[in-house]
Length: 317
Image 1: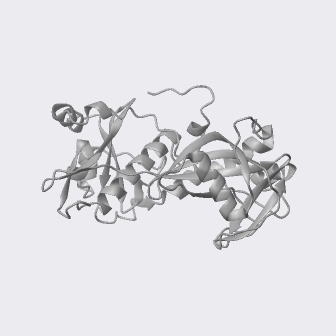
Image 2 (image 1 turned 90 degrees about the vertical axis):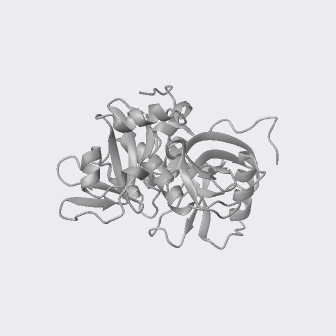
C-alpha cells in the first residue's frame, strides 16, 4: 500500500485516495500482465457506460471475481489493469449490457462519492477506471491516419498498426481557485447551482499556460479582479470524464467586480466569517459545495486557517 506524507491535502478530497501500485514500469511485460490477469486473488470493477455497477445488499459490493464478471456479461478481453492493492490485482471491466436491476445497480460516481458508500481508496480506483474506460470508448481510431487502434500497455495506450502512432489517455487540467482580499474571498455561481449555492471560480488551462497564469486569467475573465501571487493548495482527480482540478489561492490586487463570463449568474465577495456556516449548511441564505469537491476544501482551509502567505517579492500583477 502506498503511504502519504502527513499533510497530503489531496488524499483527503473525493477521488484523491488511490493507493494502488499502478506498476507502470511493467505494463509492457507481457508475462507479468498475463500472470496478474490469471491471479485468482484478482478482482474487477464493472462499468456500464460511465456508471459503476454494485451488487445490492450490505456493503454494496463493487468488486467481482473474473467468473462473476463473465457471468454478468463483462468484457474481460477489454478489462484494464489498474494496479495492485493489498488484496491483489484490480481491474476495470466494461459491462456492455445493463445489469439486472433486481440484484445490481449502476451508480453515478459523483453520487457514490457524496453519500460515502464506498471506501475512499476504492472510490479513487473507481475514478481511475472510469476515466480510462471512457477514453477507450471514444478513441478507437488514430488521430493521425484514421485507422482503427488497439489497446496496448495493459490498457494504458492505444496503438495504430497502420502508421505506428501510440496514443495515451489525456487528462485535462482545470484551475480552481479562491481569490482572497484579507478577511473576504471571491465566490461565484452558475444558474444550474442549487439556490443560494456559491463556489470557487474555475476554468480549463490553455496550451502554453502556467498554472499561475491560468489562475490569474480565469479570475480576471470571470470577475474582472486582478490578482498577484498564487499559492497551490491541493489537487483532485475529477473523472467526468477525465480532469485534474488544481486548487489554489490567489492574492487579489483589485476589488471592484466586473464580470465578463456569461456562464456566471453572480460573483461577489464573502466575509470569511460566513464561510464556515455556508460549508456546514447552517447559513441563513447561502451554501457551499459538499465535501466531495475540492472547492469545499479550499473554503474550509480559508475559514479555519485564513489565507496562506500570499504577499511576496516574486508576485506578478
